[in-house]
Structures are given as C-alpha cells and as structure tokens.
Image 1: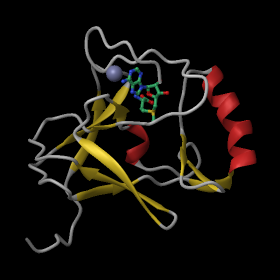
Image 2: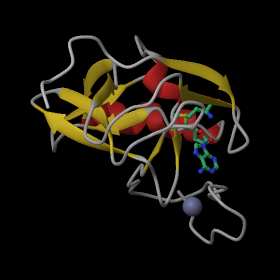
Image 3: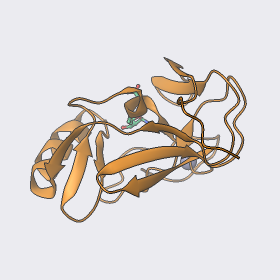
Image 4: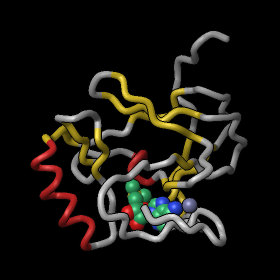
Length: 138
Ligand SMILES: C[S@@+](CC[C@H](N)C(=O)[O-])C[C@H]1O[C@@H](n2cnc3c(N)ncnc32)[C@H](O)[C@@H]1O
Ligand SMILES: [Zn+2]
C-alpha cells in the first residue's frame, strides 16, 4: 500500500484511563505513522532532574530516545504528549534518529483511544489503570 501523505486525523479528549487522551477521528491502518512525540531534546542528566520534579506531580513527560538523549514533551510537546499508556496497546513507538514515531499496532477504528506501552524504567510510582484489575505500575 502506498505511504499516505497526510497524517491521520486524531483529537484530544477526556479519557476514561486518565485525564486527557488522544482518539482516532478516522480509521487508521496498521503501521501508519500517526504522530511524532515532540518535545525539547535534552540529555539524560537534565532529564533525570526534570523527571524527578514531574513525577512528584504524578506526570511522565520524558521519553528516552537513546542512551544520551531524551525528549521532554512538557517543553514544546504536541498532542502525542496526551496519549495514555496501556499494557495491551493499539500503537507502538519507533525511534528513527532523534524522532519518536507513534505508529498503529493494528487497524484502529474511529473513536478508539490511542495507547502505547510506555516501557517505563525507574521507580514505577503510578498504578496502571489501563483495564480493571491491571497489576502493573508505570
Ligand atoms: C504523557 S501523559 C498522558 C496524558 C495525561 N492523561 C494527561 O491528561 O496529562 C502521562 C501521564 O498520564 C497518566 N497515565 C497515562 N496512562 C495511564 C494509565 N494507563 N494508568 C494510569 N495513569 C496513566 C499518568 O499520570 C502519566 O504520568
Ligand atoms: Zn495496565
């Protein structure tokens, strides 16, 4: 199938999982690049400082790109920052250089909430609410 020229339409709305979430406005086929996870590119040392501060408010904004670099969506982020985590998600992340793509892991129908696995490291201080009875901490 030819690669599409325009990104699929998505919208930010209140989510049953947590606060804001991001939802598909149209059918999105498997492996489509939906959005890039934008944010200031910072080094891991700076990220550690900021993350400690963000986590005190229960927020995860920093996304690891590689061993040196992290994207902080709290500075210069786009709607990707509102995509919630799920343990059985319908999206996945893919790193291409310093760009983090959120891509469809399956066909996503209009109205479905987009989710990906955060694969968090560290203290795991937030109880996952992706489904009733989920035992994971993110
Ligand atoms: C990148 S933000 C996602 C947007 C967030 N819902 C908001 O309104 O700002 C990440 C934060 O959302 C919350 N979150 C995301 N997925 C979650 C889940 N499955 N269970 C519980 N909290 C979640 C956590 O507080 C996490 O720090
Ligand atoms: Zn979960």
